[in-house]
Amino acid sequence: MNDKQKKDVILIGAGIMSTTLGTLLNKLEPNWNIKLFEKLDQAGDESSNEWNNAGTGHAALCELNYTVEQPDGSIDTSMAVEINEQFQISKQFWAHLVEENDIHDPQSFIRALPHHSFVYGEKHVDFLRKRFNALSPLPMFETMIYSEDPKQLSEWMPLMMEGRTSEEPIAGTKMDSGTDVNFGELTRKMATNLEKQDNISVQYKSTVTDIKRVEDGKWEVSVRNLEADTIEYYTADFVFIGAGGGAIPLLQKTKIPESKHIGGFPISGEFLVCTNPDIVNQHEAKVYGKEPDGTPPMTVPHLDRRYIEGKSTLLFGPFASIGPKFLKKGSNMDFFKSIKRDNMLTLLAAGAKNTSLIKYSIEEVLASKAKRMEKLRTFVPHAKDKDWELVVAGKRVQVIKDIDGSGRGMIQFGTEIIHSEDHSMVALLGESPGASTSVAIMLDVLKYNFSQYLGSWQPKLKEMIPSYDESLAENAELLKEVDNSSSRSLNL
Image (cartoon, rainbow, N blue to C red; front, side, top):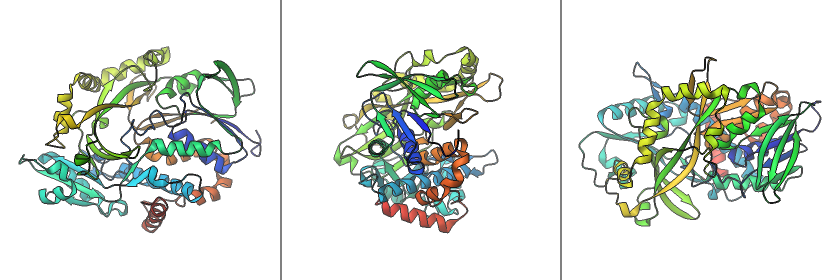
């Protein structure tokens, strides 16, 4: 295909990833034809929905699993720096959309909210102290404050410190530059803007049932129109599968070699929610702790102030559970249908290596509300059962990959981009910190799959993301400039 020709693009799933990619492509190539298909009746209603995630603007300000302690006791800060920079990229792009009047009322999807870390016990206090010492010299984290003083911690986290009688050591860090992000609302705003654009079609209640190559090398996508109960066929030069947990089954339908030896382990999340204003108003922060020993990163406990549907709430969790659905509104046959000859050994090997995760998930499923309240009281000592109710959050499908061709599957934590050798098919798999870093991830999709356009796109990319193709970690002046500018535009 001549580089100057229009491309036909199909995006599957109207979550934060597809709407971000669609928005970027439309800004860069407004004449390209883009079709977005979503099986539900609105955008952002699965993993991106505000009730299906904790709404943390992940910037590694408080998330302890992004700073791993090494065998020699040192703290590896590289992941924290990378995630912080990626969130800065997202903020710049969202600010650009606000400045261009593509989306409005930024406070409806992003709000300033301090991010704290909180730990107890000598071992974890020692870790947090070392983490602070490693991060605070870096420009991204220079405003971080550390304290082991109960009086200071009571000022930062009054709800969590009231009634705390244990004499074991405690510690916390504080960063005022944190955010609470309503990814569902942001997704809906971007989808609404896409619907207004020429050459873009957004179709809801439309389920993709098959994806296959056709003779000219393009892709034919079969779509069931749920309202008309008809099957429609569309062809595209490029297909992006951004269907959350539903991405693995769709990727398997493509039959590309890169889809082999990949599976998924579905995990549900649950949160305890408090809406009592007398309690909610005592906690104006997101506070992350340390995951229990021997448990995976997804088990990190956190207490989050949220602003959803015009109301302030508190969420505590997450509590993991397992089930066969790949999507919250999916089928109990999802997992079983995803088992193929090429990934069976991979799945079995991963299961054998991760019995502790499976055991933990089963224990969480069987746990009573009383058991969950016990965990909450490690954060909120005076928490009363009557003030908290359990809500089911979204589905996360942990990617299982054969990483060395041996069939020895490994569970992957984080986000995975799978793309065909000819760069015409891309699937996004995985989970946190995905939504927060969605713009950086979609820039990687552009880099990997549209490399021939990057030269001509660079001025526009620079306009939308001023730090594009530059390192914020190595340029403190640019970091300060883009952070201040994007924060002003977003009313932070």
